[in-house]
Length: 561
Ligand code: C2O
Image (cartoon, rainbow, N blue to C red; front, side):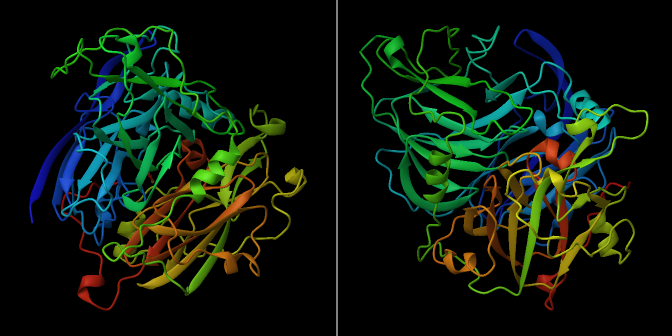
């Protein structure tokens, strides 16, 4: 197999958006960062050099890291951060995976600007048919832009205990588009040729918002989610949570008026789904697909003109709070489950964990003012455990058989059971416990985790991401999970396979996986504010009996804490 080498310099770069110029943390000076493109089966070596004064790490979101947990990236879970001036080589192979993933910094809120596409090209043809010859594929990364310093936003939020300042814009490939002040020239424009089909690789790198996406006058055919093929289906719009990726086919099937530039422009737009996520940026990022007509030639470095309204937003873009569309869209996602790509969902499980996913409040320290609810501080938890990152690497402690900094007694059930989704549960005990609790499973354990949203303060769709494993979403529903009734309705035939699931607000999602990757794995909400508040847990998968079922030894340049 081939080895592909990359070099990432984490460095500041001055970037201007919305007429605000500021230093932005980047990889190799690019915002968004460079695309990593490899082939299934490749060995990948990425030397990351930290050229700034703060710590950093990089996570390859969705890459399974079989036996190479050392290269996974979350700070203090699988490694100590890369210090100023230091380098670390992430070395792993991409086995039995293909499609669109992404990479991002996994230290504080650095991922706001330190992120990019991670594409694994398949060794075999796509299992879906193409209406027209496939053109070079197009990554579309959704993000958020803050006029201010993102590190300060995070620090202030943790100091005053309230929600963070909202971002000033959503972006498509780093560009906010014409609906924001001072932004018409910062609009993403992609030229396409009439009659051809394009593979769009959608990535939601936004910190705190689940997004709808649509293109005016065009339907999209969903073919893959989180680098797993799906049964293709056509949809007027897409719903995508932070952390998730979605591949769609776009066929340029409209007929623009010849030589009329404005009729050849089709707006694409992304905006949030839920308004209950607070604080919440209620704005829309817009870009354009521009048909190549007789008056426009595709040039290598096509430099689009400034885009100024009027243009129309895609009328197929769902409205805020369109839960009906959201539910129907998510319900349409099915594993391909073919002979070539079978669905390996465990039909029975060895262990079931039921975990609440919630916001909490904590009393404000004496003589301080807190900006959460009722003059208290916000926290977040799973089964009432607010996850505290230790100051050493858990994976290293585990490997060296030290128990320093963590324990393995994460509760397998909620500490108390009541009507989680009823009205006004604020009357319940809102405090949380703080600690670094994981659970431990033998190699090969067939595991089910039921994620139960609670109505504490706010029902929200929490995008829960599991490191080191893909999982199958065997069930989801609104209200309280019913252990007697709900498992009977599980889809064990073609449930969608993902690495990030949006737990329905005021509802639950049940996921199943086979714990076949020895190491220490982080599980957390991919809304960055919730990760900061402790909405996370970890689990340890023990080594198996065969040498091929054991974690590899640590790389020699692993950073010390
Ligand atoms: Cu995409 Cu733990 O992260």
